[in-house]
Image (cartoon, rainbow, N blue to C red; front, top):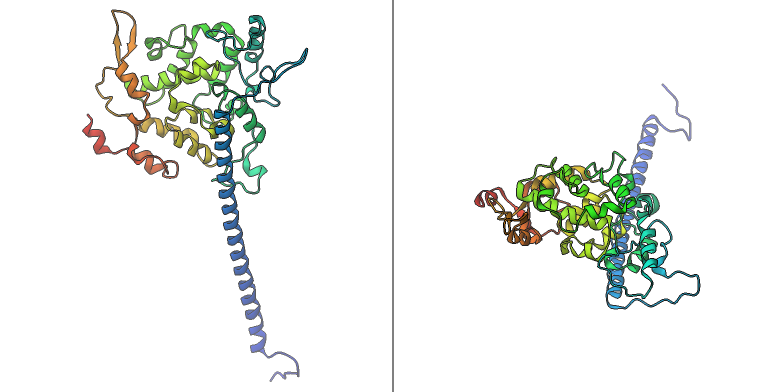
Length: 381
């Protein structure tokens, strides 16, 4: 028989030793997980507070900009005014075209044209402010929070409303991770900004036949027809979307007070569109709430798939068998005024139920009345 010496552990005690040690390790791991969960909870709470404060600050600054007159700055000999200088960095404030522009400063017309030419000669890369990913630059970043560059915010608020261009990643459109829709827009913007003569080929009010069919002398209309022809759109929705897209792209390429006023009000960029870099196709979504939701979630969202389903699900109420074009006095085709008033009102648009099912997080906060069920769709036929 084995003899046990004083102070030595019995076999039973030796077996119990490792069991006690394992129990202690399990308790330590459990406490660590609890601490980690608590840290994550506090981090999410900080993110929410930070986002809320930032949104309140943006609204406050926008309110101040809308109610306070801009101070007049004096310049000495050889100095340019703030409006004549390109803002530090890549964000630039374009100058309105000379057509229909009142002379508010008293400067000679030639100086105005030189200033206009200088702004319009900005390259595509210099018209986009690149922002780093929030996940790379902030310990407080999450899917519910966004990081805004203070320089971008100040540059945006210092510009008139018509000159506040959305913060697009146009120069990154060749990246396969980006939305393939509209990939031809970046080179088109570069070409049209470099050629002043192309603006005259793209009038503020295009011909309806140019928007419906390609092959005209209007290069912007041809680009839009080529893009929309690949989407599964019904004829009324295709005309309405193409017309709105034309007005939006024309303002994006040649920003001016006139081109901005041609945009439907619901297509005006939101504060998040102006300060957070995003793919430009998000700006074509009709509802501002849905646009901001896509921007907030673009770190995980397949934007190309989401926009594709959005276009498949988009419907205009009461447009079936509608006379959406007409001919006035035996002249050119025109958009029916009643149809125009209908498609420029976002309340007349809706999304099929399938989009709400696939992207419940994106439509959170969206008016439930915009959901179109199958029975509602059949009833409208």
